[in-house]
Length: 414
Image (cartoon, rainbow, N blue to C red; front, side):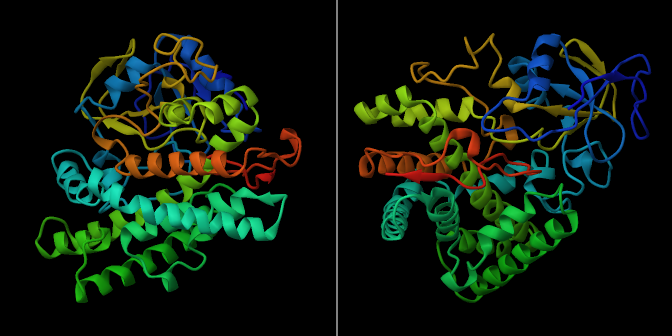
């Protein structure tokens, strides 16, 4: 990785030629190592200009908690202004559809779309889904036990469970789920094979279209039914229904897969924390929040926003038309908000972390992700008092070139 400043902002920006541009190459890291580039940006004391591996030009990067919070809630920054533009980016292509996506919408349209999706993500809905997720979890671990120790937790648990949970939420029949976890993983790993990522997204989208067509013929109260009913009522378009279901399916299957595996890896490499949760299982919800804060669960940053007018923020002047990224990872390690931020600490109490984003684009599936993670940790701790890595930590294989970080395999014994 290089963070050498340079002064050629490239096409498509209005950069001050005197403002240094830091090249951020998004190298892969082993384990849960935190990107030193972000540590350096936290020390800068102001926003910095960066260039990512793909796209054109440069963009501003917000790293400090207060600056990230301000940039992600300021209505003068727009996601819809991204549509049709080439901006320096972490991915060679857009993962979500630009024309009908929640990710590329601004209020008030964004609020309308979120309101529809929220009907399937209520506390009651999560409570009703929890027994189904628990049964699936227990069945997966039963199968793993029949396989015998050691076994790969990614293969037996972290891969299949998140897909099953989000597919159950959507109301997706079993015959539609074949290979869906693999398609989601390929879609979210665009760097090494962009064409394969595009093909995977197309396959997932085609499956979603077929599912929504089924729900139009036979209504239901699952998420697919909610989306089709909203489309029929004119609250959202058909394209928006497909885009919303696709995004939730891909992110639910892939992000939770990696985040939950990261959590187990973190506990297995922090034995005192693991021992404490065994002794105090009531701490699991609090521990999950701290793990979400502590774990560098993605590579680089997500989508930027475009300034719609000149403004002052984070100690710099941002001109209309310039792109602004906000690093939730960096914000979660800001020492002004989290004392000793590089330490995993289950005694922090209520944690206002940004692992699920912030502002209008806060993750709609955060309740489901939390529920899955808590169930996995609680069940693993109860069933396997001797759960341990089956290989030294340095021999765990990690995914390469993915937008979401996580172990490729997680061999454990019990």
